[in-house]
Length: 82
Image (cartoon, rainbow, N blue to C red):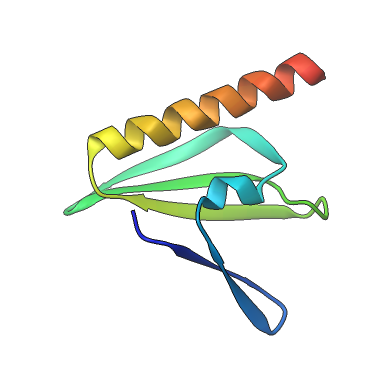
């Protein structure tokens, strides 16, 4: 997976893992199977408590599985703290 850009205001910042931009992840996410990989759309709240939607492109099912495990772990942690 290549780097992603985060836009806020007038500047752009390179983000290694866009899922880290979310302090809270919704339990619903969407996976779209594309010709050359998968598009994963994740909703949640950012550090300023705004609702945001991020899109992550992965190239194969192994990368997709890694992201799904990461999301599931984060959602499980959220449930434990609430």
